Length: 436
Image (cartoon, rainbow, N blue to C red; front, side):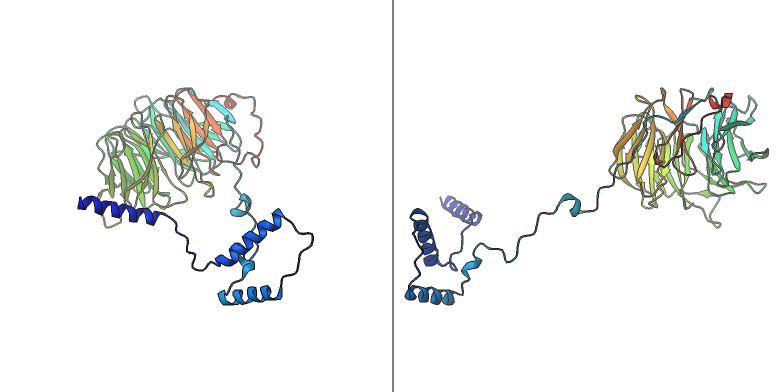
């Protein structure tokens, strides 16, 4: 019973605490009652003329006000005029207008014999505005400045099909990875082409991924699970070997600073490697081994506006885009896209924080995401098979996509359509419809 009494007392205290009890110690009840009653009488029986107050009553009012230090005119009054409501435009900076994103490709070229293989990398756009694409055993070059196409090289059957292509930063040399484990290095300009050298002895099977650290260090990834740094200037070109993957290396990307290398493989693993120093051993230990993906990791993209931020995409059984702090190895976010992620590209314009992804089934689309909210800004459809490869023009405005439907499409996804120059009419020759 005592316990009940205690609980009851406690509950009453809580009820009292929850109630608002006004403090009337500073309230002039006499004056309030007088004003209330006089005001009501005046409303019910308005006098014909307002009589002047008696001297004794006026003296009493003044004396009462002085004693209570009252300023009756400030009851329920603001000291200053209340501020005007702030409009939505005044609350912050004006909302940035959304830019128009064309929903259709501005140009389509036929790309016959494009190998339908998720693990290869058959498209790259060089700094000299020339797009390279591998179709079967042949590499073709499409010069965006004059819309012309030329053949760079056709390899022998025992060496092909071609497994990867990658332009050097200078835009004049291009590396070609072959199925027979070789890597060819070609020199190209508008008037000539030349085979500079063939890198041999590093890999034992096809070389499906390539990445340049700088103008002379070429990193290669193979089906043999090896990653090799090759110095293309010297005879003994193998300078570093990275071991960690268990299956084919299908994604390679150096960070913009050149301090870290990201690699993805068919073993569902993502590795972050620190740039080796001159004093380090020929075999390099990884900085981070990341196993969050549940399918092959091919799509890799380093963020241009935030160092140490990497986006990675998983294959058919994963379907996720994940974001990483590569300094700490921490996963920052994961987004389920609903379909196989084949390729990733950031908008090079640092004022537009956007990421573009290409996908397989079911829509075979390109999706533009706003970062970091990962809200979909646009979905670009037109391909009828999975969009395996993407490449970005040197100015960052245009994206080329190559799909298993043997079409090469150009999208003005990152550019400003209003500022873009009108496309020239294609010349009525074979190269305006087909690459080869």
